[in-house]
Length: 362
Image (cartoon, rainbow, N blue to C red; front, side, top):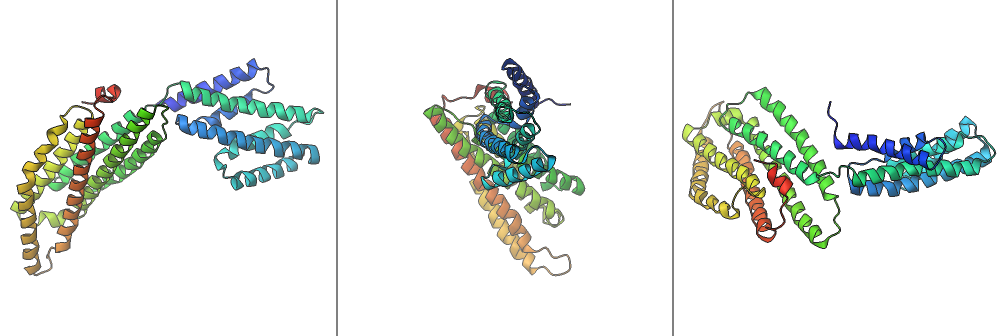
């Protein structure tokens, strides 16, 4: 069983909400605890947006509940109709994420049948809002998330696995069904990476300097994710055409594997460079591979010409080579762009170091 930060924050929010409700002598403090459950969010910025929506939603819910209670009484049918109207209003004002808590407010207010209904409705509204504010305070000060470290950890782990499987696929050493299963998992993990990127993007800084640094980092991390996508697309192609690749001449396959190994190693070193473990100018070593790159392209053209002359049922379609090499070229271009961004960031922000990030890797 894993207990993440959000699980712990939810528990602390409930306790804090109940404590505040009892401290303020509010009746039925349980509604404050319920509100805290709905109001907890994975990031501080989302918590800020949530509290604004929750305030609007609860005002709508409380207003409708009081009006229906005064006009139609407290019959269960009236409660149901009030809930329907609240849902319609919430969707009209695009407050869908706060519908559940608004409905809790409606039920909490309309179940009371005493004489002081209006005063009771205000107290119940305040009780719910105590839970919302308690969750916001806990989200603000308790275990603030470090999304940058989580984001890079996920990118680094995913890329490491993709590189491992790509090396196997390039040598036709991987088992077909295992590679297919790995590709499906990689796609799911890539979606999780993009969600984490959105969380990091939502982080807010009050310092102008930090906002500028984060803006450059967002561009850099976006390129990291794009490059990972390109490497995954390349692995998909190698997997799809593994039989055709195995039928190519051994010398040609060797040149492709050598070029691919170079790019994969280069990718690994870029991640090292970003964490400060590699010199920024180390990227110049890619120029040494230019001549070999030209040789590969020349061999590719020759191989396509040879394949077009072949006849028979086992003929290898030349466009398969184009598919693979287009992915290879796309991957290489994105690696070079990522390298440029990392060098630029390290050059202009050498003093802006994330010690937690640099100490957590390698």
